[in-house]
Amino acid sequence: MGNLTIRNLDDRIIEQLKVQAKQHHRSLEGEIRHLLTRQVDRLGRIVDFRERTRKLASLTTGTRQTDSVNLLREDRDR
Image (cartoon, rainbow, N blue to C red; front, side, top):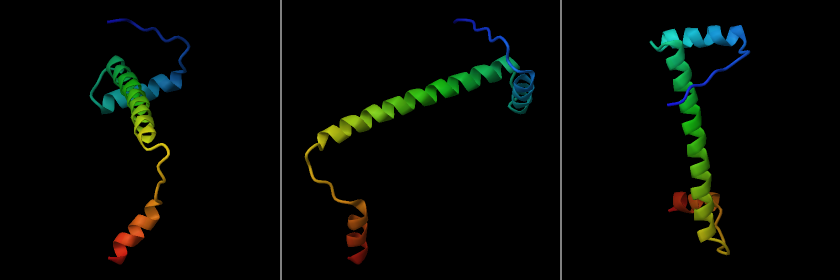
């Protein structure tokens, strides 16, 4: 595993991270590791989601789409 050094981080941010770490029963390093991992994983899921929706949309290219409002109204009228 690699190491990371962050310079010139505002003291206020460090104090807030320490408070968060204590609340989550983690060390400051553990809290920062958790936050960074969570953020990167989240961004990866967003990219994956966008790619899957783009592929799905390409399957219906040229097909006329019905407005979902109309479908809901038809269903309620039954």
